[in-house]
View 1 (cartoon, rainbow, N blue to C red):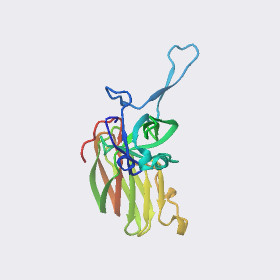
View 2: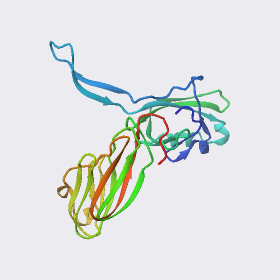
View 3: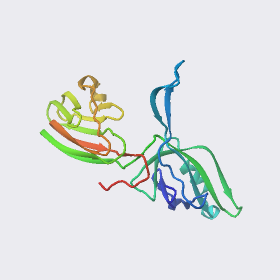
View 4: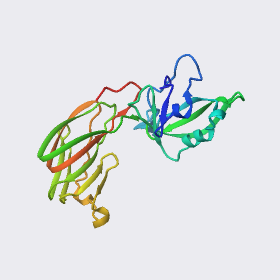
Length: 261
């Protein structure tokens, strides 16, 4: 992570802003190996062994230092602060691994240390929205006519849930079966040309007719969502008549570069 010289934050390159990452400590780089986690347990009177209730994974948090050279000549110090001062998590991509995305926001204190000659560096505290980094969103286009089978590979370290855009052809039902675990995602009584957006991660379904016809599909869904197991290839069977955009976003625990896909 910290061996990078350049990065992109919120779609803007650090090179364009005249800043470059530095390693304050010198010598060896110190990167995150695993997300921070804590054990949830309950102490029971008279028992030396507490009751284990699981683990809680905390969002990634790390420091990022960058050098600003001759900011007075560039006259962009305020521009840099506006760039970094966001109100929500924004994608952070480091030069050393462009296929890995952190969704990050600046928190805590920050100081500009400089020599009085318009050269100096800033150290910021970065907090991410989850314990993981992510791949770019990967899209698979499918045309389902009665029945269609396909394999999806999750090269990440965590089980993930897909996003889907379903364009219905003709009235009727659709289903998607995960053959590795028997999960069946099913929607019934859909209309011709209806477009359905599905986010399995957030367990959300939206119909293109929701606003115009006050149509909600929760009662048309069997309340089963799709999982793609970590580091595995999974077979899916699609049934019905529809076109589908199937999106996957891998989750990673470490900096190691992903396989090419």
